[in-house]
Image 1 (cartoon, rainbow, N blue to C red):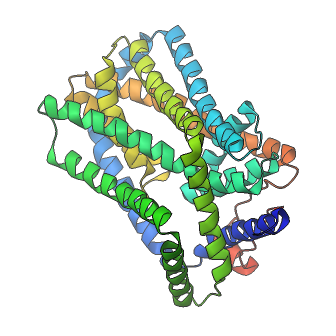
Image 2: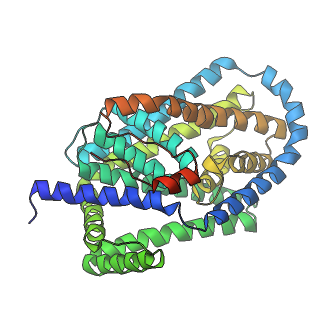
Image 3: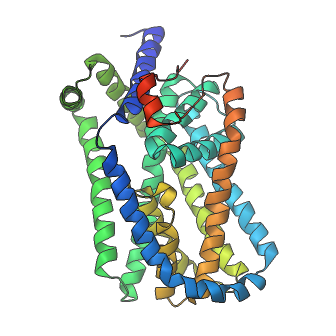
Length: 382
């Protein structure tokens, strides 16, 4: 059995490998595919938003009549949603026998989301969060769990909310084939991941061998070196996290993810109240889930910009909400729940790098040409 120092060294090697993989992945010549998909999605967003311009002109009257103290409550609800993310990270730290202040966890969640917004999605966001968590005094095992557990829980909660919304649409006879197909595809992808984890947790040796062989083939295709021991150690640490969840450690993280989504829904509801058009919770849930789940999908716009707004407005309009009200309320919600926290996250970078003692430092290279010139050196994990 490995000593604590050897286990820590192995896990340090795992996280270093993850950082190296993240930096080297930008070398792939398929980067043009990401740009193409982004352009196509942006085109779809423009196509969906153009019909809303007329409604936007009529929305000025709605803006003038908004109840500003209700918007203040919506701001407080956004803060509570952020605190839910802090509860999740705090629970992960406690699960692994460490301690992370609640407010620090919330700030890390906000800042890491901003990293994902500019650096390409959940992988860099997870790496940034794990670095800042590690730099805040949490052990390497807890930092490694931070890479994958929050994303899994957030998406799981969104799947439940989306399923409830689709059931409501079905009861109202307003469930269209494209909505059903979109949800089915997303649900199938998440189900495959969950099934793979469940199968792997029962057959760990087979799963570890499968991951090792897949990693070797992927490295061979890219003409890169591959360390089987590091890959096997990474899989082992993931299984350790699953074991902690199975021993009752799942309660705190699930509560944190649930509170984050609940107060995000409350923020959306309060935006409609402020616009003078209160809605039933069922309507809010119905129009919330699928757009937010689409925002989490790979190869979409950063943060679902354009897609979330357009699809939410369309769903609310289909449920009988006046379009001018839906436009104002949805844009107010996105300002409070997405844009302001994203901007705040960028401002938090220096603070988190300072309190993490340099271990949480995250930098994004200025250009792909500079990345190639620098050879993608991963920053030290400490």
